[in-house]
Length: 42
Image 1 (cartoon, rainbow, N blue to C red):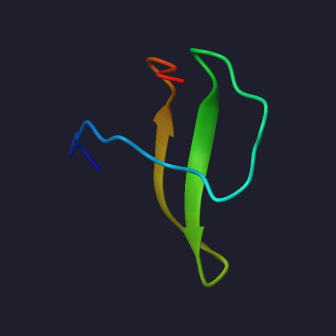
Image 2 (tube, rainbow, N blue to C red):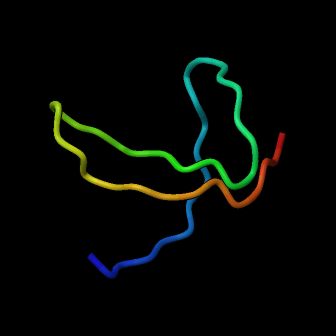
Image 3 (cartoon, one colour):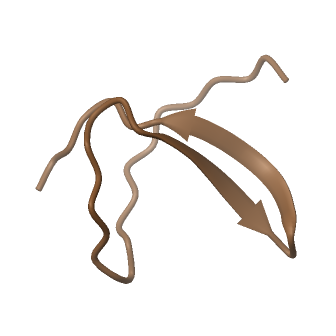
């Protein structure tokens, strides 16, 4: 908790997203990160 990072992500499949959308990153059924979409590039 408390760490922040900016990252650019390329998705392997299309998905509908909007700026402000909250998301979780999961690995092996465990949540390893969470964030908010701040900008849509393409």
